[in-house]
Image 1 (cartoon, rainbow, N blue to C red):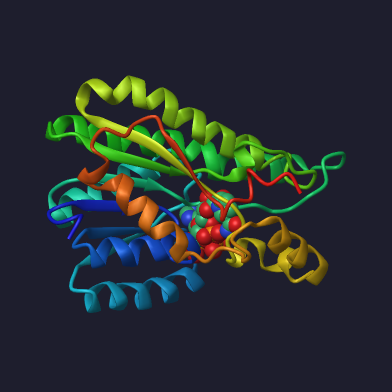
Image 2 (cartoon, helix red, strand yellow):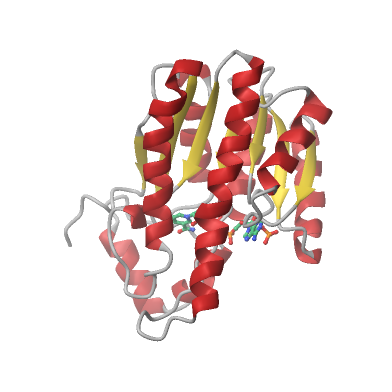
Length: 256
Ligand code: NAP
């Protein structure tokens, strides 16, 4: 029970990686705040997630609010304190990746991606950190960055800077928040099969190429991120801050 007595906020927890993290946090006795966009489809996903969390023996409440809004972090923190009395772990996971070429990138696509993935995250991390400081017993902040923080992508010129930005934010926050016992780390997923890349991976040639590049011989599943995030969230990682953990089946180190 690695997260006993801890309250965990996870943004973008309705689907994909965030959802798998939420379920594992619940299995480890963490109480969960489920962040999501508030769309009609996300509400359905959230209802089944709350059921899964309760089946795992824990509790959850959800907050539907746009990750791009600088006030969303405050809403998530308020909900956590009202429901469970504290914020001990904050997982910044919500993100979008609308694949698009660089030379004709629409400004609205660029700004929406940066606002959703990075600008909103900045203020959400700030809100969580202030609550943790006030509680006076430290905390753990984890950003779901990407292997894309370290490499480029022709169709991701708006996305990769947000992921590099999150990694950098965790590094700087590790220094800024270390004096309060608040640890800040990043996980860098490789290719994990979720809605975000469903269309991209529907191309069989692209799919085969990604698998061939991965030493472990398969694409990732959302659950592959759950263990690494719970580790960083838990006291098992009590001397780990400013770190980045690739969770990519070995893809980054493979030159092929
Ligand atoms: P996903 O299945 O598409 O899930 C995205 C999540 O983000 C959903 O819960 C979604 O909520 C939420 N979200 C999107 N826009 C939002 C907004 N404006 N406000 C609030 N919530 C919003 O994608 P995923 O693959 O799990 O991605 C999770 C994170 O992992 C992202 O930050 C992504 O960049 C990162 N990542 C993924 C991969 C990969 O290969 N899959 C690789 C590296 C990094 P709704 O259901 O409400 O829309």
